Picture 1 (tube, helix red, strand yellow):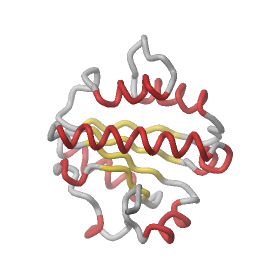
Picture 2 (tube, rainbow, N blue to C red):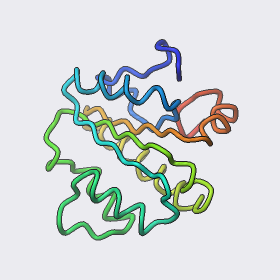
Picture 3 (tube, helix red, strand yellow):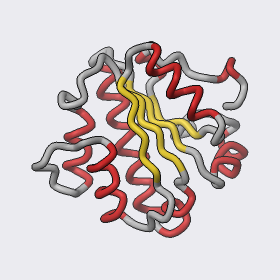
Length: 153
């Protein structure tokens, strides 16, 4: 997704989803999202090797409510109701995801599914919701998906 013509329009919920991008793309996407008055949250996954650490990092980076249950269902519930992050749409940026992808592929895939479900839920409510991932594995996924968002159909 290095070419600007491939970037999704962050103001269009019809383009909501989970995307894999190059490292250099995150700054541009963050700037675009902020310009459109979307909430932007970054999560650094460097050295993250499993579900417990992932959920701790998400709780911190997303400022999840104090009663967040640190499980997949609780994360899904929180991402469907982002009332504590007031904005008309949300952009989540995930850096350095390769460690999690390599050491806990199942957890990584569950995270992608939770985020994809949240994007669909937001689309149904006509709210922008995007998740962007970077990491060394991006090039593997890009070659597998032709640069399309996850999941590839």
